Amino acid sequence: MCTILADRLRAPGRASVHTDQMDAASPSITRVTAEPRRADPGLIGLLGFVIATLTAQLAHLGVQNESAVFWVGAVFGGVVQVTAGMLSYFVGDDFHFVVYNAFGWYWICMPGFLLGGELGFFEVSGPARPLFSMMFAVLALGFMFAGATHNSALPLTLLCVAAGLALESVGYFAASPLLGVVGAWLLLGASALAFYLLIEKFAWRTMGRHVVPLGPAWIAPRDGHRDPES
Image (cartoon, rainbow, N blue to C red; front, side, top):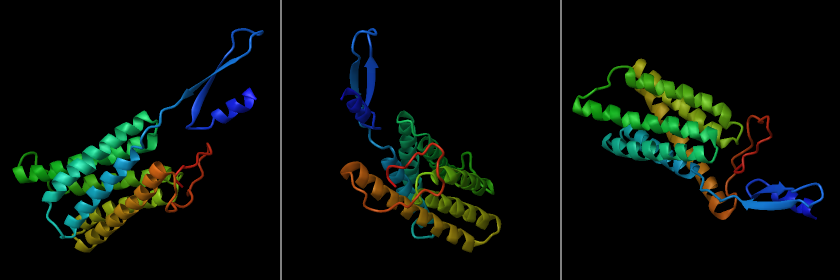
């Protein structure tokens, strides 16, 4: 009976079991330590990405000016995503620790470029900004392969980010506004997909229900890890 109870208590996310034995003649003593439930940092990370990306691409398409991009990008894209990334460290989530920190600091730099242009202080001009975006297009493409071990929606989101940033960068160098517009729409698609992921994550974490399908993983991880929200 004790063995069955201990096996059940070893289920992930429920409790940790420690067995102490004084000597060969004495019975073992099982101590159960409950693990505290922690909030998922991805909730605010996805929220920050959705709001910042939507705001920036609406400005890119001429729907609004860049003033909103500065504040929304710095706060939601920068501070919120960096916070989500650092909190991911404490829950042992390497993937989101890197992804949210990378794009969080990207969003802190981009408003800085805008501010420098307005003030004429350390102004970033010419090919520097599109090259900066291209670097993150490559990063997003690299992150896609790790994300593909979770579900289908996550790598598709990262693929849209990579393609959108790349097209906007190439559009600048090729002097092709059309490429920039296509890139902006791809990034709006990434924002929509991230919102889709956020709906499922929020419903699962708050109600314990799967409300939208995220699709199967594209790549089967070696350790048999299965994304709990897929």
